[in-house]
Amino acid sequence: MRTGSDYTEALNDGRVVLIDGEKVDNVSTHPAFAPVIKTIAELYDIAADPANCMQYTAPETGETANKVFSIPRSLDELRERREAIEKWARHTHGWVGRSPDHVGTFLASFAAHPEVFAGGERDFSANMVNFHQRILREDLYVSYAIIPPQVSRATTASGWEGDYLQVGVVRETDEGIIVRGSQMLATGGAIADEIFVSCIKPLGPDDRDFAISFVVKPAAEGVKLYCRRPYAPAATSSFDYPLTTRYDEPDALVVFDDVLIPWERVFVNRDTDGVRRQFFDTGGHVLGNWQAQIRFATKLKFIAGVARRVTQVNGVDKIPSVQEKLGELAALVAGVESAVLAAEYMAEPDSAGQWLPGKRALYGSMGLQSEIYPRVIAILRDLVGGGVLQLPASVKDLQSPLTSTDIARYVQSPGVASEERVKLFKLAWDIIGSEFAGRHQQYEMFYAGAPFVVKGAYSYRNFGYEGPLQDVEDFLNSYKPETV
Ligand SMILES: Cc1cc2nc3c(=O)[nH]c(=O)nc-3n(C[C@H](O)[C@H](O)[C@H](O)COP(=O)(O)OP(=O)(O)OC[C@H]3O[C@@H](n4cnc5c(N)ncnc54)[C@H](O)[C@@H]3O)c2cc1C
Image (cartoon, rainbow, N blue to C red; front, side):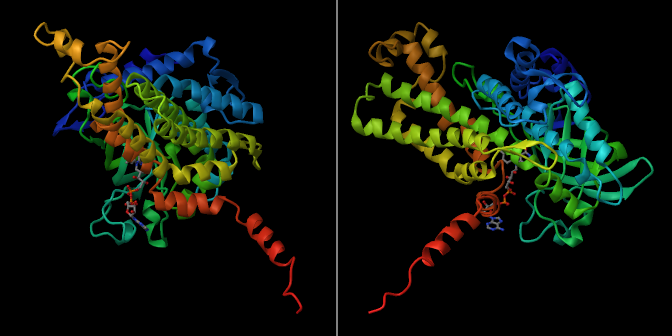
């Protein structure tokens, strides 16, 4: 199995990652990326240790592989898959959204349904199966860029002024397709082995050139990754910013300057129905988003723990109205965790024998995520009060002879020494108030699509309104106007 150092060494491949108008020499040593790369490397080391029970023999290759990349063929395998995902999520406390298990899960389901990739002008089914086997064998970290850039949402790309703002096929050659344009955002793209590029937003008949799906190495000629401002380099220390300094995943606009994508890396070409089917007819969207909910539940439990500790330290945890707030928090968190387990309980095999979590529970939980996360943050914000600002500027104030005595005297609580109190409240600030925290709120609200999409398309369509409708119909038919 791949180790953390195997992963880290592979990143120094000449990829064009751009920050502040300059190209980054080597992401693994750059202060913007090195911290989160270290975290991803730790995940690989955890998986490589058999004691962590993340390994299995993949039937597709006959070799040892990571369960997070498995195609679940039974309810037990689905459960084991969840437990492996949880193992990783617990290590990051849910603060890394696009760890290798996220896109790796989508691609496992895609490979479970090779027929979906056989329906276009060419048969790409073997490409998908082969690529998934590479993930299994090589433990690849794949990120994705599947949303068009936010140029205008009034029309799709074919209606925009300017050719190829969204990535599309310029021409086909014997070797492959030449693609040009951009895609909105690849979280983790700058530190991944591969980027999966496609379009999940619905496309119209005039958008055929943009209806593509392929994988590309970040170091492929013509690929450029424009990263948002990184937060980790500005963080003064891990004591001051405990989350930013470990989990600041890069988000990057991906630009393609006439990039050759060899045919064996193409999964869909100029097929608007094909790009839709890969997400929704393979189970990929279900299994991939269940991975995200498992991570999300882990993160919410961590935040709940911080909230409870804050109330203990401030001596308010016995006050009934505070317990009511903690109770609301508990209810929100328990709801998400329960939906993860309910989806597993409602799981069924699909036509390929792949076990998929129940859609009603999964998409029901996702539909409320854009409200649950801000509410959870608001409760923590309420509980910490000004304590997150009654903090020394940095850890240096705890160490300097000029300041340490006052800090030790005034920034403490009964039975809680200054260092412990400051540490806790700085963690709380990294959850609710830092730039990292702000980005996380945006992430949880949007990573699976804008709220109107998640509710209107996913929660609404997958609830199964037929049953409740029939119940109401039967009830209404059970009585007639009374005869007077
Ligand atoms: C932190 C972060 C990380 C991300 N990481 C990734 C990644 O790794 N890979 C990836 O592919 N994408 C990623 N994304 C992109 C994410 O998938 C998109 O943000 C999401 O799909 C919503 O698209 P959008 O941002 O273009 O919003 P839009 O579709 O432009 O919507 C923005 C808002 O406009 C309004 N609106 C727009 N259109 C309509 C409409 N038709 N009807 C009603 N209201 C409308 C709504 O208020 C909506 O919330 C990430 C996003 C964030 C914030």
